[in-house]
Image 1 (cartoon, rainbow, N blue to C red):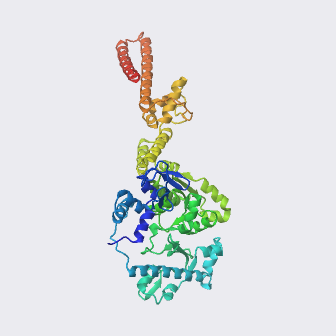
Image 2 (image 1 turned 180 degrees about the horizontal axis):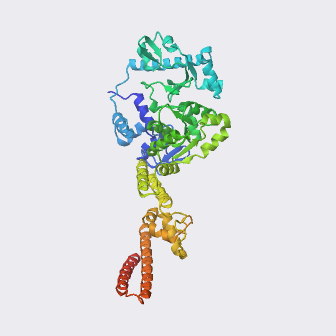
Length: 539
């Protein structure tokens, strides 16, 4: 029977969180590094079933069951391996190809691929310290890189000639081309990377699978990467992740920066949990990989327009991955600088300030909404509402989404409504209201922002300071709305009585009898509505 190879099953494990898979069947609570719940494979009252998200496995200390997302799906759904793979592939949104067992030729091709890229990295590393690479060595040392850092990250130099094509002249051309290091031209094989500062790209197992080359003459693009190959896909690879995995676990977060040099400098200056995308915009695959390690992520981008756009895009991408254990933040390096420059000129302490002052996702999403839409006009407010709704719909955790909606309902009422903390009609004197009414209104506004929005025009007439705290009035949503309606009716009746008094005074000069009768009719109708509402409340 055909089976799926390790590449595809590894892709599933990278894309899907074991916590998400298990929690569909088992309620889990996080304690320390692990999630705990009652084992689904045997009866127990005290949780002994442990799930480790960063490692991707579960283990029961009661019955000894142990496995990953595939074995859990097989056990819980009572299906075979093939059916479990199909179900997980659908959950991950990954097309299910028809895999066959790897042939000897395929295994040999992969081994040859890794052998070529590893040998090429050694060639580049040697060239960096040769006369040809003197300008590249000078550049990287000028960026604050020590020889120890250069060695750790395998940094090298690709000269202007065809050093790789000549080095592997006895290697089969199709295998050499498959690595992306060389191409076939009209006059034979030629190197893809020339006169570039070379950064090896490692897979999760620490094997070199590709390279990123930086220009040294100021030409654009600044970075070029190996084109996608059988063993390398830019959209699924994070630079520095192989070095950062343990640090992400220890720091209980990951930091994402924009470039390779930034990532290396961050890792070497106390932020070992830092990674960077590879010359491409951040993707869902990148976020999925990181969330497998840790759901606490701080994005650190440049403070310019491009950085702000990148952050806004990252915000939209990460929303489906949010859980109630997530802590997602956004930090910005301003003044035309980047993390590399901050660390070299101001040191770790300054970078600490930037990272520690990062804005929580709930605030950043609110910020970009207000920046992109004019919320003091009805049309602008409607557009902003639609944008927020479209973003929040991406959150798959329903309870978490509800909390975000509740938070934004409160902010919309306090910041978008036509009345605000500072009265827009300060010249109108409005008499103070008695304490109980004031406290009840404050409670309703702070507890039920949707009611505050619905009856905002009426509530605004009381000219209250809604920053004040209110005592608990113990009103549910329905009772709170009835209270507002009854209060509104009472104020309406008061205004009608005042109007009636004025009409009686004016009747000495004018015949207002018909108007007074009409006002009396309105008063009677309002009183009947109020009595009916109060009677309903009593019941």
